[in-house]
Length: 256
Image (cartoon, rainbow, N blue to C red; front, side):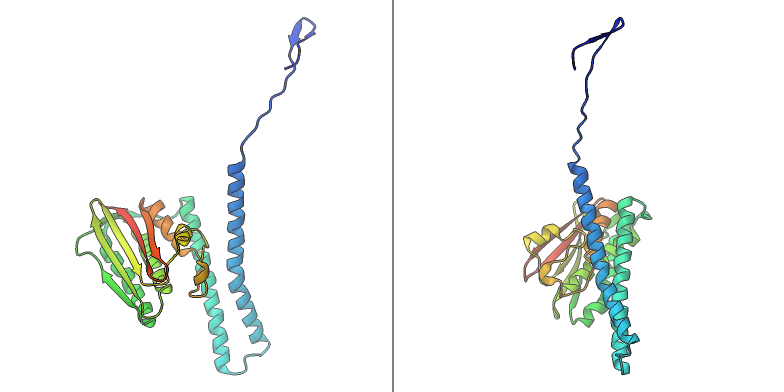
């Protein structure tokens, strides 16, 4: 402050106050949000461009025979399905992160739920000439869980394993009790992950570079599983993997 001045019979001081705030955290959040929007836009642009291109080919009469038309319609339908999956996964993630997803936790046996997920994926495994091996524990494994979201997590893990395992491979579904925890594992004989991939595979839109052309996807399946297991059910998810030998995804839930 500066020297005191006399105004009438009162002395006053002149001064200044500087307030500084660290906005590095805010900048980091803004950067992540911008990257997220960019990733969403990129993921939506690809199927939309494909749909538009094939619709234009049909409109221009480039599909002269029924087989070609059927092929064009199949591609359009597949890309529309991909876009729908992307939007549904985005909505699910947004609801979970905002804490507004409808959750109805009740005590339930985890093995019948896993059996249902297994039954859903058996046709996909047979179509790919793969073995889907059921190694569920004979014990009663009780958890406090929201049935719908936990079933979705199990289906996502099995579907992911089937996508990234070559024709003729094997995927195992296991459950077991470990003291006061329920352990659920999906192990595959697939392409495997590098240590760097293992660190990033649960990030939104992360796709393993060398496997991008192996299977279509949105890069949201595993982040969704992570939210379901950790945020909704208070569990944890892990991955162990070795390139060219396969991966084991494991989620651990509290037992009741």
